[in-house]
Length: 85
Image (cartoon, rainbow, N blue to C red; front, side):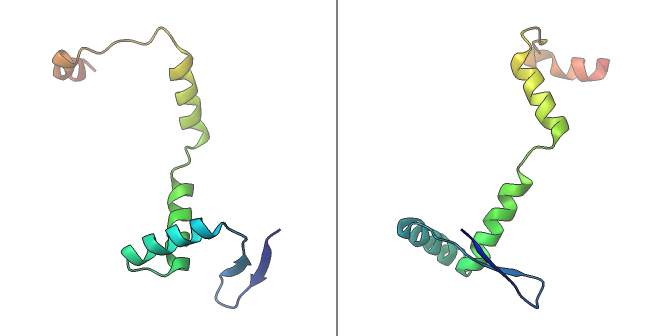
């Protein structure tokens, strides 16, 4: 269960139950980056969310994985290929 408290700064305070080893590791990384634990965790969560592909990208990934008829690009002739587009 997560306890959520809305602050006056537009930020939400939450209480999480995390493994002590994970907290130790997060604190170590935060210190290495000269950040508070909160700042480091917030940064990493934002980074994780940005890395999530949008639906169009997910469809392209699925199509590429399932399609056995993909063209093979000869890297030695890449400039000619680009010029032909």
